[in-house]
Amino acid sequence: MGIFDYYIDKRKNHKNDNYVNIILDYPIEVGDDYYLKVKLCDFKFLNNIYNISSTLMNNQFNIRRHSKTYTYQFENELYIDDTGFFNDQNSLLVSEVLFGNTATITNGELSLMYVSDIIATNSQTYWVNILSDTTNVFTRKLEMEENFKWFEITSNDNNRITILDCIFYKDTYVSGTETDIRIKFQKYNSSNSSWEDIDINVITFQNSVPQEQISQTFTYANPEPNNKYRLICDTSPLPFPLYIIKLQAYKQIPVFDSGTIDAPVEHTITIPDGFYKASTLKTTLNDLLQNYNLTTSIDQYTNKLKISNDNTAFTPTINDLIDDNFQLDLVIPNIPNMLENLGITNSYQTYIPVPFNSYYESDTNINLINLSKIIITTDLNFQNKTHNEIITGNSLAKGIGNILCWVDSDQAPFTCINYRNYEDLSYKIENKHITNIKLSFYNEKSQPLNLDNGLIHLQIKKLQKKSLY
Image 1 (cartoon, helix red, strand yellow):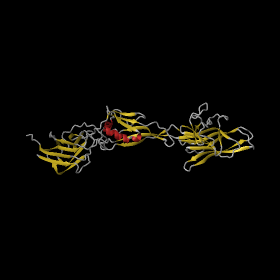
Image 2: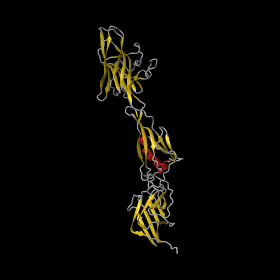
Image 3: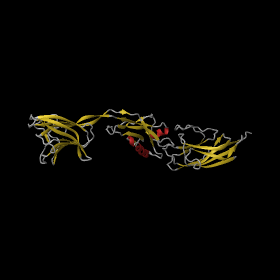
Image 4: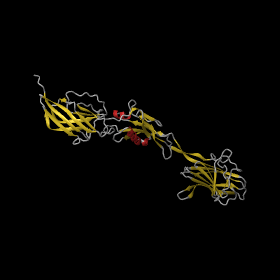
């Protein structure tokens, strides 16, 4: 009888591999009168295998994202009329603020200022309803005069005013045949603190009649956002009082279509390798899914994983035409331990929708135990094969046999896993000539384990066959 002992420190030649290759100094050979047995005497390993890692193939899944792209065209919308400023009886609904030679009325983000040299701060009101479609030349008119009386429009939203609809009025005879008056529509340039012309129109009054009203439209052909506009008379002196009895404005607004769903794009989500419990997994997933407005939670009673779609209804704007998260699907690899991690048992499908303004919940509790056992196998050929009903774990898994030991490893991270062959188990092998021995490491799901440490005591016994005589 002969005994051959091998003491292996895995870190020496095969650190980070899922095997150890033992090269024998001298071959072991037996004839027909002898046979060999193999025995794993003891094994020690520092439990530093992450429960989520690229090695276990459970650290990546995808988000399939459908975006939706909108287009638009510009249209004009009534912007300034008497709505919100005056009621049906033409009474002012808002406060009128008098300051210096200005009277200002404000409704929301829009302020209208009448500038006049006759305004006094102790007066109650100057504004009358010239913002209506209907006019009244007796009670609803405001005077204009170069350098003394004009109108300013201020918008906090930088709107594009495209059209001013106006009606000008005079009620006096004057000498001569006609009078030309130049009116300017302007915008304020804040960069150089000056007024710039948008449109200039000349209106002509017939002097032979005492009352005359003229409709005039001012346009902004290629409007840009601006927050301050002005309508001002540019003729002086005037032979008669000039009034405005109607002032309405239109702004340019984008009108969006219903949108087009774009081709889906898949984005890989990689969970950093590490030791995870429920709380740290939830926190990590929330960080990784932040760009998709997905939030994870774990039910405190059932430990089911819930992924909520927190995206709000998307409203396109000129500067943002793409709803990035229009439709979101989880793409989970069909790997049993990955599905167990997330608690997906019965509802697996290639694409798992996370409904808008709703959530997806796993079928059962999450399971973050991916390593309950360390299985050590050998390439030596057992005479009596080990029975193998180990669940296939991933696409790399192969049926494993010649199992030397099955070591409990569900210990706390960074504790030592110890195996001692107290039962003195050994296995008769059919090999007659051995020059090297390969030991491989798996978990209970047939997944190779890349151990970066381990102390192993392996023994080969050479025994003589008993004679039948």
